[in-house]
Length: 259
Image 1 (cartoon, rainbow, N blue to C red):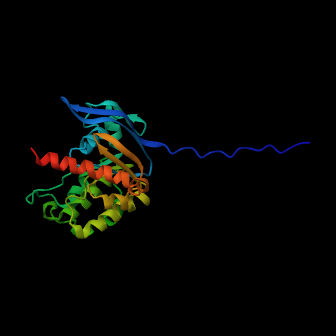
Image 2 (image 1 turned 90 degrees about the horizontal axis):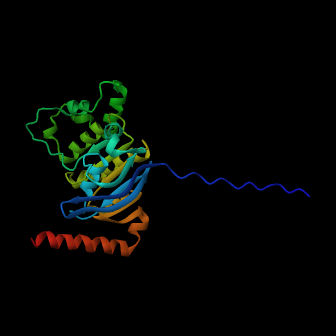
Image 3 (image 1 turned 60 degrees about the horizontal axis):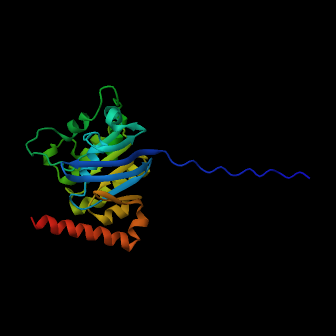
């Protein structure tokens, strides 16, 4: 009696991690800035990093970008060590730092700022540039000086500049701090569009928990140590997580005002 052999269905292979942190620690003399941080970011993730001031978010970004190599542990991006391959990795990353306030007297126009992001060897295709201008909605002020724009307009310009070399990973350090409340929704829509339609993996930090909940599919809650890393729903639907976050934020707020 022959029985048909059951072939077990193959399990889908896990997604390839784009970023892997293993036991990352940073000290400033005796002060602990980051304490044994480990997590991974998969391609297509939209990771929101939350934590009070002094939590180590900006230091973490500097480590990810290879700007700070004085850390213990390992950081791999695109399966390459950031310490030894920073220049190669950086070509695939778009970065927008915390503050983009321009001197109103700075003479460069928006168009000139955008073209600063173009490598001589890459993207001489005007069609791609036009698509990017349309995507980020900066077409109406290309000839204006960068210093004459609002905070929200400046951030759009910096996103366009960061995207011009077609990065696979976009890192934004509190990009919503300089943006008027009225245009924030448009800004978040742009980020969602870049993530979902262009398949750009995004890592960003913000103090706006509602915004992180709205746009991010993953959350990392940081205060020197990593207290949570996982799905947004899992974090925001758990009162214990939110309570811990609020307690740490309040503790830091009181501590910073007691000096």
